[in-house]
Image 1 (tube, rainbow, N blue to C red):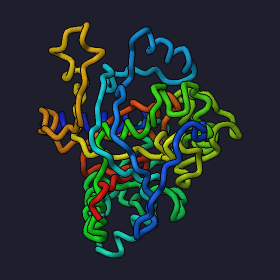
Image 2: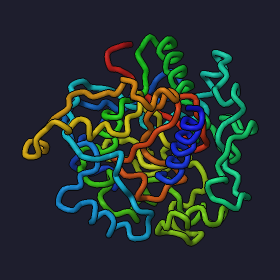
Image 3: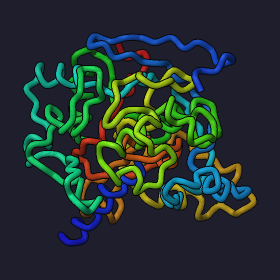
Length: 356
């Protein structure tokens, strides 16, 4: 069992490394609200969308042709696509939680993160010859010292799911409001922002570089064979988004609903427990002619699966600076254990409306 858990942990962390248009004129202006520590939120209304990667009409083949220079995608975790209805409004943070916002929590509570208590976070060590070995745990790597320069406006990294939940609990008490992590369903709904394309800006992977911080020529120049290993499109030093590691939040164009960095920058923790077969399980007993209309209402995965005998596995969304454009699509999803912390994982929060 210990060996099984170890192998799954390594697979999860490696997977997260690999997986890794300006607002439209016809979109209504969305009001943003700011809380006591400078976090801004956009109100998201209830609605319906098709969650996951839709492989009908050879869309998976079209994706492969459009991403000829990217690592192959299996869509194992984000298909089959299915309709989701969200019946409740929510407010989503416009950016990932920043270093300054997380520091406010630490200074107010004296909280120590999982990485600080448990021997550090997964960091990046480019001197290692083997690409996978470049990412390993080190006591020197924490949210304070991720191994690269960050300002107060950068997304906090090296924080676990447990740390993110504690932050939400503190903020809820601070403001007499309910703060929490988004569900996977809420996260993808907000990321898509009314679009059915692979990305919130459309279907062109090369447009990623003005909308997202992804693995590109800037990263390749500093860490040779990191981006090239994923066969991404932009590999010259001056190509791509121009950012090596994390980018300052809101540096890139927002999606049509005013949300920044839903693609790339850092993976974002979600509320749900991880289930690799979740989408397939929904449709197992649904006849083929009825699958296109099958609908799930307000889904959130909280049940334990056999995999959870090895740990409290939680879902992550969005991809990171370690990921080629193909691996920051709206439907991309992966997982890690709730106590895991890496330099390519952070979070953003939901504020439930009408609670303050």
